[in-house]
Length: 371
Image (tube, rainbow, N blue to C red; front, side):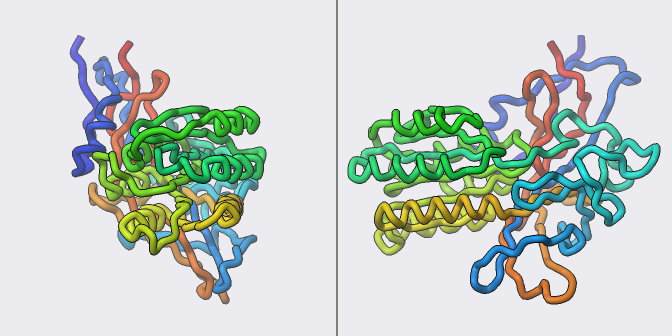
């Protein structure tokens, strides 16, 4: 039987491409009449809206947001505030739930532009409430001092998260350790935190890139919360590669550093660039009280984000696509918006025997996988 392979869109960065190509899907060619060829782009944004004092602004509606991609106006498909229910949006009107039809007899997902596929791959037509959160804990030899205080701060953060969210706990020194996979069980996560021990050199950027890759297939709000106690001294991956993949997959990065900004200007600049590019924040906490405050701020931020998705209008650009999010309407322009500012098209990945499309993914290939 003749076999065909998925065509992967290039990142232009070798290290990312190698990681993604390792799991590239393979498809079996069948009779052309039985092929279902789809081209789907789903872009998900996590948007923080604050006033000049940094207070979160709630109760906004889909019509309050104006989204453009490469200056092309986009139409919102789904909308969620905080951990509330997901609303689909059709013809400028909200529809309760996350799977209703745009109009009678039309099986396209609500909000899809004309010409979009009527049947979406599993997992792309709905977005679950809550967030998927990956905690990445520095257990390198930088952590010998204050290790227990760091565990306390992380454990309190885990307990503070809402019941709708799932949490994974990873740790790193020279290598990444996936201690607890995504779970709603807070006891399991805290037990994983308490089981860690300090170890070797710090390969933060290598480990963070692998964590972003783990988060990439997930839909809805997804965030990585990094706890770092020192600079990276063992990675082969630069922070720019991590930031790019996180942008492309819609993954927010928050970083809590135990060192004050002036103590390590190189790492400070890298942490701020990575977090800002993904719509997150970087915190520099000089003591355990500041660490707990930083985690509290992250928990607060995650619970106030607006989650917005849209299907892009036709766009020939297959490179970097710039996203602009603005507030429209009376007295709304005074508020501030924080979110990622663009993405690149990503390749399709094969998950559990099915074809899955990540945010900002472009796929044009048979959907039937080979055995």
